[in-house]
Length: 104
Image (cartoon, rainbow, N blue to C red; front, top):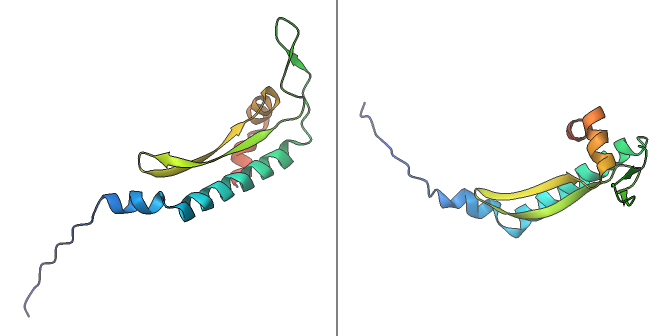
């Protein structure tokens, strides 16, 4: 039986191009919004004291707020983020691992 050697060379830019397409970025943004919503639900019962700067102005709110950032191009495709929106969210995530729990 004869053997055949097959060599396949992939265009390395193809996956990056696909991951930067509007449909892919829309899916990432939708997932980030869904995660932010879950995080906000998980953190709703967590209330912190008011945090104030040295000059007396309040920093953020008492209830954690997580924010979804829309997908943007990155080095290898696209990325969408969920970030803490105030100090209460930073403390909530630190104390309860809210971001990790929301991912499941």
